Length: 227
Image (tube, rainbow, N blue to C red; front, side):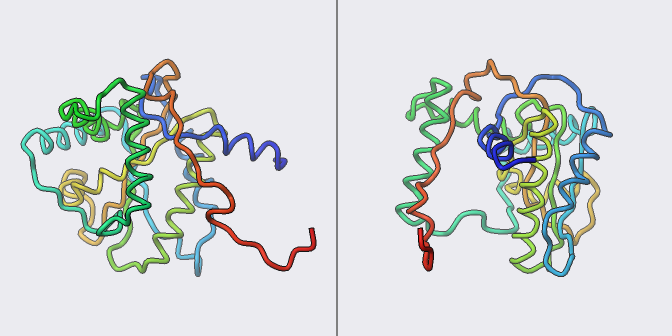
């Protein structure tokens, strides 16, 4: 793959929040996961597991999650995704991303019910035919989360190259105590997030918006170059 081809692939990748019902075969998902595992890994620990669900298995998990939402079951995330408290500059980014999403859907910022319903789509895996629950052993260090993140990015890129779309679902960790019980996972596995995988519905308004990225000078510095 050339630099130009990689650049194109990276720019085309986006978080998709509405999928077509087109099925994805087990062999295709397995191929994506095998490529994901080629990501760098400190001491070659290869942390994290990917529990792949489709069909009835995915429907069962979605039903369990939606019931938890409907009954207002308390959240039980086992790690902190965002800084607490959120710094003002990061809060601005968070609000801008949310505003762009809800604007694409025609949901007013004062429409609490509409915003809540859209958030609930996380627990439907955005109607994707494949849902993946990503876990990691509870006693792993912070660096292992970094390694898992690289594997997830490799997964996203492999799926993109194969003609599939993805999105990470951090909201899945809100029910980090419920999901292992539902899936019969070992007690030492912590739910990190979910991933939705399938064919993007490009006609859906929710897939028409893109978030901005920081300018180069805001997140990098250079020293010692002659040009």
